[in-house]
Length: 244
Image (cartoon, rainbow, N blue to C red; front, side, top):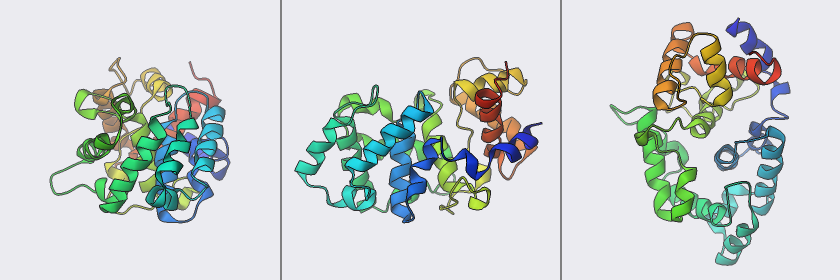
């Protein structure tokens, strides 16, 4: 059943109403990465609202995210304080731009998410948080998942799916080669967690990092090379088919 749902939902038709449509507006690698991490960061709530607000965010970056991140003046950053989406408030977008500038001056996002010997994805997510936090206000810290304290890191894992999974399906980008699809973790949220429990592939009640590890371990048995492909199946069962 899950493989059939992957084939059904992993198509170009999936993109239009999904936050991944935001990085699909760009062709330059760095633009895709920055548009992706920003869109993923505000990906909670109604998908239509997410896509609309992420589009407004990119408009404020003059639809040239990498050039803006690297060259924005203090006045430019001040103008970003007008962007608000739910708990993502006035301090947050300017802070993200400052943090991303520092990251790209030191090798970029792909470098952070390329595991060194003995490391895994969880270590990279921790490193990303460590690299971001010095440039953010205290209240902005909550927008960077803390996997060391058990966070599921749904939005970061979703971003990694976008960057790493192959582009053949027409949805994800396959931009990064330092991580393989086999290493990725499911972007676990309320919908995929509910479907996982209904299907008997997730027993843990909390949607936390231990639950991410549990459900991903099961999915790796089904497809050890690309376990996160089942994100499409679980999403479709929950959102489009209303499986209860």
